[in-house]
Image (tube, rainbow, N blue to C red; front, top):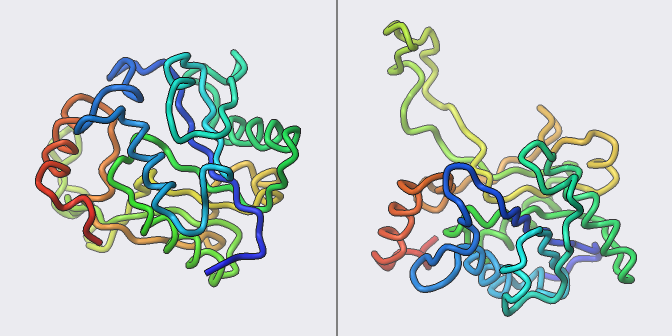
Length: 224
């Protein structure tokens, strides 16, 4: 499937990480963590390395292979307080200065190493067909809210079982809409792309890293 839209993929790779220092470059199954996202882009049929910007303040990322455009992130966008929206808009503006137009932004965080090129293409296709202004990847909450306790040991009053959470693996948004709303998700205006839990793992700490490596070494990373 070809599209008439200019789709720009943005991979944010801030150096600082409180829980897992240097995580974007930590080896996961023989490759730096961020390289799994670069590989997923290479496996995609709808975006390429020529459509991709890695935005980073980490000198180590500049040596990565398979990346055509690396935006050296300004200092004010290299803090934990900087928003992903501002990071994306800065990257798109810089990309425009390099001669590239953008209609649609797809944010691919390197902390989702099990997201595949197949996921990327299906999410883009679903987004375009939906005619919605944005799309986020979601998965079902495994720990049902009705079975949860609050910090005081009281059961949650929410008994509905079909709860979802944002996986963080894929965000797609119309650029002008992002400039206007400054968010990726708006209730009633955002399409949902469902992913299985095992492909939705988000690397936030060492335990997540261990789980992701065990899944990948189990040989199911290419499944759907």
